Image 1 (cartoon, helix red, strand yellow):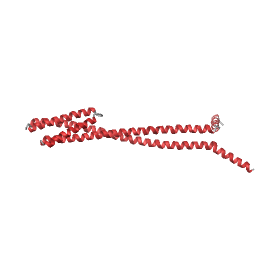
Image 2 (spheres, one colour):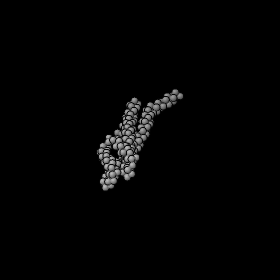
Image 3 (cartoon, one colour):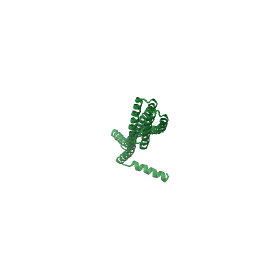
Image 4 (cartoon, helix red, strand yellow):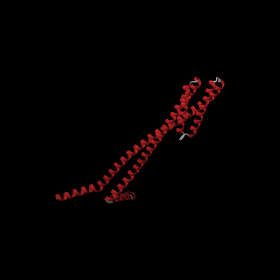
Length: 232
């Protein structure tokens, strides 16, 4: 037998000679470390899932606000053009109401898009002022001045529309990314939960194996020997 094999055999014998209390304590420590580590990872994943869900809700709320602003802007564009073309009082009232709604909705996005909100507020103001100027020109049959005013209005409408479209696309992408994050976190949390269950089962089985090998089997052998002696 080589020195290495002799050393390994001595090590195994040393482990076998340990008391039952030490063996059980060692298994319990290993169980605590394994289960505690997986449980800690599980807690982190659950916490991460909750954070991701909150962020997803925030992204959805912001996208809804921007969508509402886009609807109000579309109404502003429609009624402004209709007001100038038809010179109708009802169209003018609808245009002013749409402009006011757009302004109120812009205040809702100032908290997370202050720069875009400022640009859009300026565009809405320019659209409102320009369309009213054009309306006055057309009412007094000043067609050339009215056409020039409407040219500026159309330019502002186009720029604001492009800005809103880009803003909506960006927040739709953000929401999609948050949905993916929530899904990934949920899957990781599920894996961690199953890992915790497996760790508990493994630790319980290991503890039973140690107790069985160190106490139950020797006790059975001793009981068998005593019975044989009693039978003579």
